[in-house]
Amino acid sequence: MYSSNQCAYTINASFYFTLCFFVIAGSAHVLPTSCGTLTIIKPTFVNRNVTLKFLPRHGWISNIVWKYALERDVRHKTLKGLEGHVRQIVHHGPYYDTMLLFADRSYNNSRYHIECTNVMMITRSNTVKLHLHDGPVVDIAEELNVEEGRNVSFRCKHSHGNPPQESSVVWTRALNNQHQSTVTFFAVGSGYKESVTKAENDTVILVCVVKSNPKAEISITKGNDILEVKENGSHLTHTIASLSCLDAGLYSCTSAN
Ligand SMILES: *[C@@H]1O[C@H](CO)[C@@H](O)[C@H](O)[C@H]1NC(C)=O
Ligand SMILES: *[C@@H]1O[C@H](CO)[C@@H](O)[C@H](O)[C@H]1NC(C)=O
Ligand SMILES: *[C@@H]1O[C@H](CO)[C@@H](O)[C@H](O)[C@H]1NC(C)=O
Ligand SMILES: *[C@@H]1O[C@H](CO)[C@@H](O)[C@H](O)[C@H]1NC(C)=O
Ligand SMILES: *[C@@H]1O[C@H](CO)[C@@H](O)[C@H](O)[C@H]1NC(C)=O
Image 1 (cartoon, protein in one colour):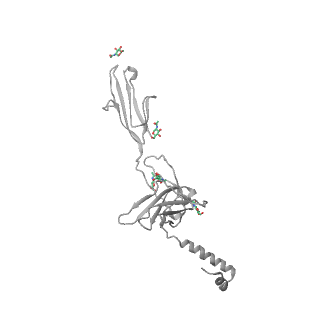
Image 2 (cartoon, helix red, strand yellow):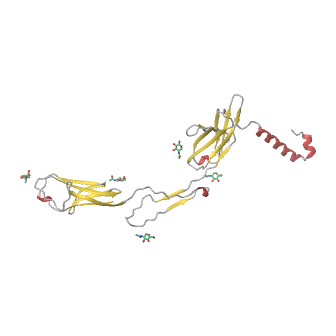
Image 3 (cartoon, rainbow, N blue to C red):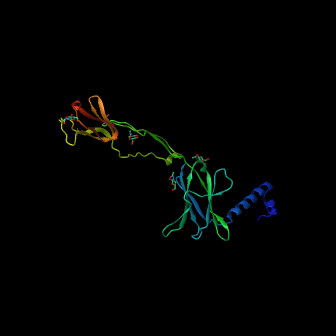
């Protein structure tokens, strides 16, 4: 320690006070040895999970408490995290502990450290500060109706996150091969004939099968009369329980998607 005489002797009074302040503050920081290294695993986005990683200085440091303070908090609170802290054992390597937390906007600029306790004393890790970034926002039409054989263009409106160099745009395609619906089969019973003759009082079943993606609306009609309709279908049947001469005519099956 400097004595006041020495300070006064070498430098003027106001500078002396500044100098002594630094000496005291500096020595307080050196006191306990840090019990390990705390880091934040990047990237760190708003409304995403953030992982903190603590590498203890010694393998036997196990009594640790995670502490945090939000930007405006003065005192540190104990951090619980999403899954509690997890100790990972790396093969032939050191131990480390991780902590997972969900970081909404209020966690921006929050501070973290670890308190290590043993019978002798409490030591701390370094303090880390969490800087949150805004993720990119993407706006793309969810559904487009396009006819088969036509060109289609997609637009992806997006704003880069912050910082911009950490975001990129990637197009992906889910394989969902859409096509127009077609009627692949329409007949009385299971065998196809252009024209079918049936006796009075017979029962007939008209069967219509459609190939379509997405599923089609199918209808069986006789002239202008709609006899049967099904949405989201791939096949449709219509039964006439007992034929009469009034049932004679032209039946058709149509589909649309
Ligand atoms: C965050 O982690 C929890 C626990 O593992 C998980 O259930 C949740 O889906 C994660 N949330 C996000 C946004 O990744
Ligand atoms: C977090 O705080 C910093 C400094 O105040 C600011 O620059 C940054 O934009 C903030 N992040 C978010 C996601 O608001
Ligand atoms: C689709 O786009 C290509 C390239 O611009 C063009 O050559 C082609 O004629 C277009 N086809 C149709 C059906 O518009
Ligand atoms: C059809 O049914 C009606 C009423 O049951 C009956 O009168 C008629 O004779 C039947 N026709 C034939 C061809 O069996
Ligand atoms: C048809 O299927 C779509 C998608 O699965 C669904 O949104 C719609 O409600 C269905 N329509 C009917 C009438 O079931």
